[in-house]
Image 1: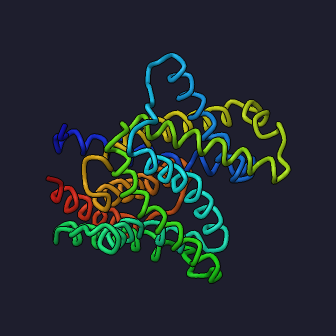
Image 2: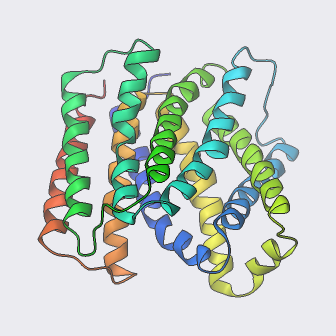
Length: 297
């Protein structure tokens, strides 16, 4: 059933808003554990929730659907491959570079759609993506401490990451032909939990990965927020968007709103610096979001 524009924009606000808040929680966790441990905790919490829902028959996954191969490929792409590429891409580049390149994912999604899925984007959609990306550049390039430093390895990894994200958008749309957003997110959670826990075992992390969760209340709250809200709720919402609109449009709306919320959260909670570039970047990015929203049918 075709969703209304108002309903889709509500999903955009929900997803982008909470993902924008996730930066503070993730930053808190990686100060106390390795990035791989943080990913394992986040996706394990989500997987446990979905497995409980499946056991209680609240949700049911029928793996006989013809879209099964797309479901599996999508889960491998995101979170298994993308999350690892993102973490190590950020490690080998500066914060400024990684932020700009990751924000370019809608443009990469647009390119992937044109080259591999025969999609013809609307002119207003292209203008919206370019405008929003310009706003993200203003946020990062003119911020104090911005740096273009980073190794070639880091650039290649981040470009690979957003390429994977581009393919994920279209694969998720194909999987939506046989599975609901909740079902697709459940499979993603299980794949993510298994992948990241195996990685932690090979990296030498034992039970400490999970005993650390209960070391203090803030760590527990951060893990639950990332696992329940930012994974179970937000990925279900994002998967619903990918099933109802062009992947490039969905990626642009959500990623840019996430950036704006991330900047605002950083200023209010983390005490990040702000200035004319903050207001200019916000205005330009929001203008791009508005233009992209007009391309929704």
